[in-house]
Length: 470
Image 1 (cartoon, rainbow, N blue to C red):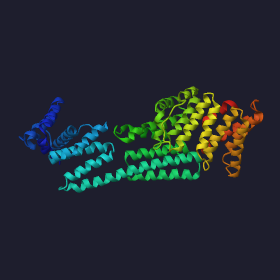
Image 2: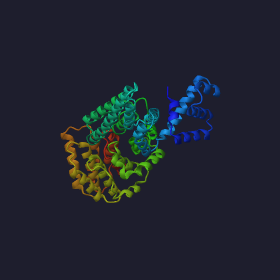
Image 3: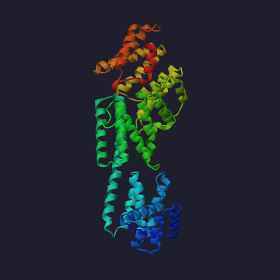
Image 4: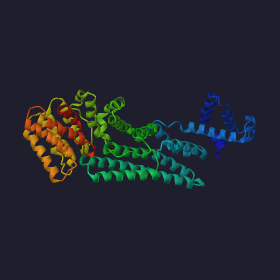
């Protein structure tokens, strides 16, 4: 049983007075009587039970709750900010070496409760280390040693889970460029890895990572979501976990990533009002959003943003980003390419197709897409369209023939949508400034029908193509 009498007896006078005043202020008469009786040492437990007219079970509950209140006073509220957590952790040596063992244990156990509530495993290591030391000569030493070792394992598992998340984002970038079966298999292998980690160490941080991986597989690879949840339910569940973490938790800074995934979801199901809410939140952070590339596929926000503004007839808003210097990881090729495509579309909508073509050529000149047919074709088809707008028919023709040869020589039959669009563009080259032909409309209808799934291409331009060819 807790040594409540000893704890109250050992409290410093100023602490005792503060707690006493609080109990008086809150009219907690039974707590106050027990508190004062244990401090004065003038009455036994039986005498207290008789005076308060309670049974032994109620007395036990009364003592336990008073002990909790004393702990609250000793360690304060550390739920909301990192400064308070650090302050309390820094007090541990002082409390351990200037207070009775009962006072030190009460202080540390309160810290333990608060940190456990928020899965703050690194901070818990400091607390369990101290609890081990003050119980060196006690039978509880082994108990706290085990807890210390358990949370070492938790910390390592969280670090490993974040490593899996980072590797998943790398692999997702590779898949986005290639759409290859091998890249897809890698993503599912990493999904299995995080599920195994969560089964062994079911902490909130690892659950967040597991959910993010499943959501990204749904949004960017078309994989079905966990059968126990709908997409919206998983998004909301993950949001709730993140919001309930303390401000001091590093994972809480991931909320913008989840807002982005909400935006992707509501755009995909054409829920305009909800999409607008999340668009405003995410777009406000667009200058730094690409720096979250180790957590999610945030560079793709730029592409979805274009599509969303097109659908809402607000494409003029894109000009607000003309010349904007987004922060991004220069070593992240996916971010670099997405930003290049985004800037090319801004130039196009600014009435500068020549500048737009130049931006896409810059992407092709800087990067080698030898092993990434999908993104290479995506960019080149956009470039061919810009050349058609500029009436640079020879340049457009050269690009389209190059893509056709590649599809035939490598046996890429699944890209029938690309062949359809090449036929549409070839008619433009033949007809020059003449009107759109019935043949072009037929080819374009086929293109729209086939341009879905993992082979979907030139998403930012489809809106413009529809206006021209339908």
